[in-house]
Length: 161
Image 1 (cartoon, one colour):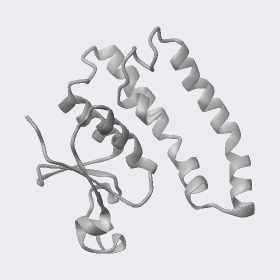
Image 2: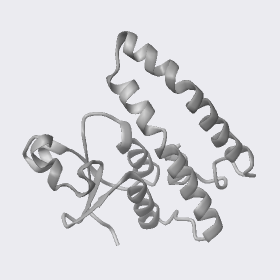
Image 3: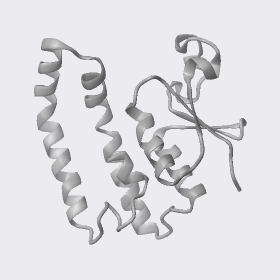
Image 4: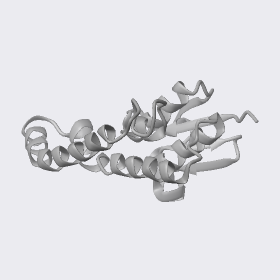
C-alpha cells in the first residue's frame, strides 16, 4: 500500500536528515514541509500541541502523525520492505540508532548555533565524549561481516549513524 507522506521539520538538517536519506535511498515519495507551512503558524505558537513538543514528524495519509526520528526510520523501513526481521539483528540496529541519537545533543547546538569562541570551547569540551562514542560505533561496524552496521544493505541505523 502506498502512503502519502509529509516530513515536517525546520530549515536545517539535524534530526530529519536520517529519515530524508532513508526515504531517498528507498525511493519513497514524500513531501518535505516546513513547520510554519504545515501549521500555518510560528513554531512557538504550536510547539505545545505537537506530540513530544518537537519535530521531525512524519504525517501519513494526512491523518497519522509519527514523531521521533527513530520511530520514523522504523516506519520507513517497514513500508519500504527493508525492515530487519531477525529479532537479534533488529535489536542491534535499534542500539545503533539510539547511540547515534545520543550524539544529537552535543553536536546540534554546537554545529548549528555556536559561533566564534563559544564554538571553539564547545567543540573542545565535547571531543572526549565524541571520541569514545565514535570508538564504540566503529567497533560495531568492525564486528559485523557486512559493509554496514548490520549486513551488506543499509538500514535506518546506518543513516542515523
